[in-house]
Length: 245
Image 1: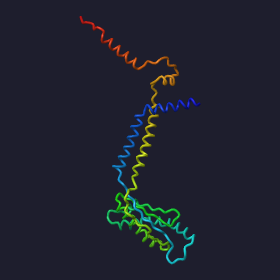
Image 2: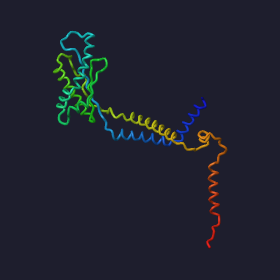
Image 3: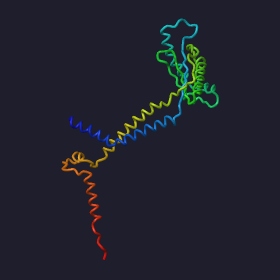
Image 4: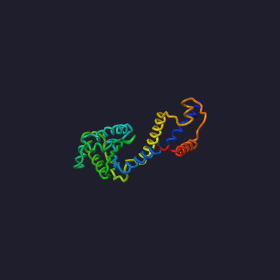
């Protein structure tokens, strides 16, 4: 059992070594292609975010733990309001021409901060200032719309306003290149195994013993074979040609 396992591993290493050039070429092409696309094709995307806190209504009694849990659940309701078409339409109106409600809805994401009464509105755009404008418009529209459609809810206040981002959030160039390297390496190895599996030609004395189950009696060195070919060619050249009558 151990001999068979050792033989299998030896065959795998032999296949990889024999096709090493193919593996290196495919892996390099995938890595270079990913780098070119990440650096020169994909446009950077910037993200701006606004933090909004949901608290108890003004004038109510001191908040207890049960109220905190209630307002954490209330955040989920406000998230759906922030994602609504009503807020998107009003945000597009605030942003002016060139923006539609679909543009706004596709640019924003709304999520809660775990175990808090805080929700975050994020906006993405290829232009940093545009991302800030969208986040600001959506947060302002959300507060006004929430007070109109849900007046019995909590007190909504902006905690952190959107700031102009200085670095893009995508594409992640290093991650893209690393993934492309792994894909190229795994794909090239898979291709090598397929090629070797489909190739049933005899190339060495080991192949003769493995596939034909015949003993190898002798081996003709390549140099001796080449020298024999040269001698035969020289002999043919040195033979006198028959003269024509």
